Image (cartoon, rainbow, N blue to C red; front, side):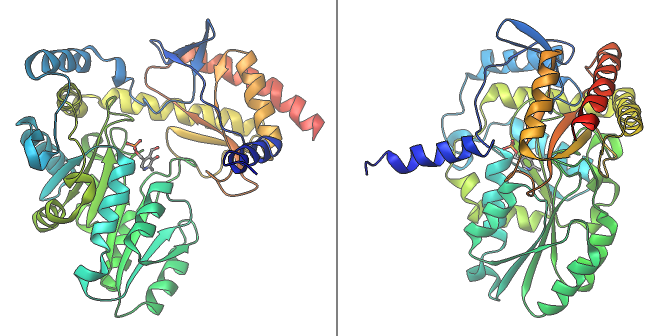
Length: 394
Ligand SMILES: Cc1ncc(COP(=O)(O)O)c(C=O)c1O
C-alpha cells in the first residue's frame, strides 16, 4: 500500500456513492447569472441574496480602500492589522443588532470555530461544559464544539422540548446553546425568543448564527437577533452572503468582546481582513437600512416560487425565507435533477450527505433580489415538466 492509496480509495468510494464533490469554474455575471464552460446560467446556488456583490457602491469602496491602504492588512489585528475602519463598522453592527459591542473576524467558519472554543473553555468557566446544538447547525459550529473539548449534544431540529430535557440533565454545568436563526440548508427559522427564554431559565449562554439572516431579515436587515437582542448572548454573522463581500462578525456584550480579544485564536493568530474588504463591508452596511424594497421583493419572490413548487408536488420543507430546499431524498435522484436543470440553463446546488442528514438530499434554491422575474418564471415552468417526469419515474 502506498501513502496515496487511502486517499484514492476514499475518493473512489465517494464517487461510487454519488457523493463526490467537484470544484467547477463559475464566472459571476449580472442579474443573478453565472457563466460556465462558455454558457450562461441562471444562478440559483449563490448566497448573494441582495445582489450586493456587484453593487457599484461596494466595488467603488473596495477600489478606493485598495488605492488608499493597499491590498493586504499585513498582520493580525493585534499586531498592525487593526485598520481604523474597524471601529465604525463594529459600532454599526453593534447598534444594528441591539448589542453593546461587536468584533470582526475573518471567515464565518473561523469565527464559529474559534469563538465557540473560547467561550466554552473549561479552564476559564471552571465548570464542566456542555454544548447543546440544534441537529441542523453548520459544520463550523460543530467543529467549534470539538475544538473546545466540551461535551457536545444535539437536540432535534427546532425541538424546544428536547432541548429543555437536555438542559434539565445539565444543571450546574456551563451550557452553551447553539442554533442558526435561519437554517442554511432548509430556509426555516428558529424561535429566538423561546430559545432565549429557555437559556435564561436554565442559566445557559445562547449563541446564534445569523449567516443567512444577515442582510435579509430583522430590523433594517440586521438579522433576526435585531428584533430580540436581549434573548441572545452572542450573535454571529457573515459579510460573504447577503452583504456581498467577505468576513464575519459577532455582536455581544463589551465584556465578552474584551474576553475574546484575549482568548479567541481566530482573532489573535490570523491576518486581519484586507482593506478592500473593509471598504465593501462599510459600504454594504451604509446601504443596508435603505434596501427595504429589495428585501420585501426577495421574500415575495421566494413565497411565489415556494407556492408554485408545492403546487407541482415538490416538497419544500418548512422554508419561509429566500432559501428553498426541494427535498428529493436519494443522492442519485438529486444529481439527475440538478443535471436536467443545468441542461435547461439553471445552476442549482445538489446538496447531499454529510452536509444534510442521510435520506434528505435536496436541491437548495437560493433566491436573490438580482434575479430577473422572467428567469424565475421560466424555472417554474421547467420544474413543472420535471415534476411530471420524476413522478412517473418514481
Ligand atoms: C450557517 C453558516 N455559518 C457559517 C458559515 C461560514 O461562513 P463563511 O462562509 O464566512 O466562512 C456558513 C457558510 O456557508 C454558514 O452557512
